[in-house]
Length: 263
Image (cartoon, rainbow, N blue to C red; front, side, top):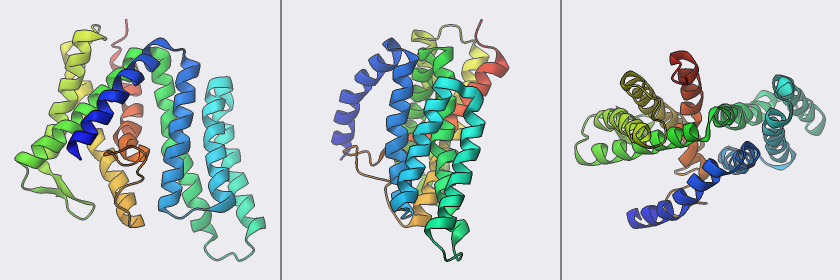
């Protein structure tokens, strides 16, 4: 299984690097739409959202990302109209009012959780494609370091009720991995970073990656599933690979703005 993970990563990562670095922002939006469709499908499948509510949620997820690219001034309106439409659909397609909040809240939350958070990555891509590479390099380095430190030296559990395998040592490893990932990016694609900004961004991404991972684990445990999907051999579902980046994207965006690392 570990070898399969490495082989898949070795094949996909160079392709994604070239795709993000050398194609226009429109192509990146298209990539976000693909990831959103698959991840939303996995999220809705976890909670058994089916039929017209599932397809409508996926459609509105696409619409949110398309609106960001075409006319972001309407983005908030599209989100509100999506909520209104899903609520109205529940009213007319299922007459029994019992469970109506449950039926509408999961599709709505899915829109905020996946395409909603992915819009921050679209903002980051507009600042520069190297920042998207930094985001995923830091998140994946944090994930990898968390895995290895947790496996070899982890003893004390971090959050037993949500994720029995995660340890305090793994969480510390995530912080270290986040910093190491940003250090590599400073030495390669983002030399504008200062030492202090490397530490701030790395630690923050390492910390929020753990939180994003735990949040998805919470949902999976609530839904009674082990993985969100099986689309990537050895890696699980798309949502399993995006969980940390979904939370890290908004954090990185505001860190870039706040500490003014762009000159």
